[in-house]
Length: 302
Image 1 (tube, rainbow, N blue to C red):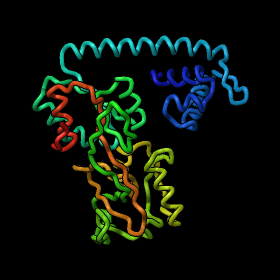
Image 2 (spheres, rainbow, N blue to C red):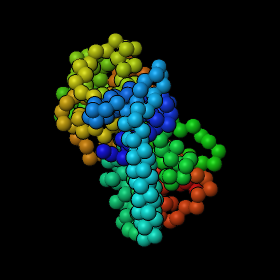
Image 3 (spheres, rainbow, N blue to C red):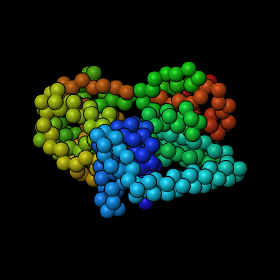
């Protein structure tokens, strides 16, 4: 049993509601409902009695939550002890970023940081923008790479790059030979009608990219052949690279991957600005300053 499993059940018990617990955990209500159903099925016991929209613990549920709270406490205590041990040996930088940025961070950013500052310890955390900002507010992160962040006083916001809606195809896709460079499009473009019947990989409608794909298909009457749904951007790139199909999503760095980007002609392409955010009163060490420089591709941030 993963510690997060206990956190989910404890949250339902404390909030008394699937809806409030899902909001507290930053996950969808349907995902939390399915998790609870699967947990109760695996245990062969009901943990809650449903009273309308209220969830009340059964006797088995009370024992589960008591044990879960103890395990969560021990896990956090251990994590804190290990963090203190690491911090005593090396400088610690806690960096958050979207899952789609993982390859760029691991291939380009961190190797350059460690080459200059080998004694630095980076705690890397791939997560949603919302959860990253929450962690930044509670001082659980030093730097956060987020999209479309609302500016708040007390923080610095450094623009990194714009993400655009693109069609991602494998490097040997026939669509590449049909695409044409056209004014107003950042990538070679194909007509939107090319998406009809095209095998397509997508993400859940609860994600930005998944929602944009569904809205685009409804708005323009497009009918791709959706063959696979994956949980995050990194899995989406892997699926396209493996040949399951193409994908429409908000672009991320793809250096070193066997995929290519195309623009979709005749479709409005929304943009999202990726920002690097940190507390404006934070004292920056040389290692953290250099990491910021790497993330901003050498742009001045002073």
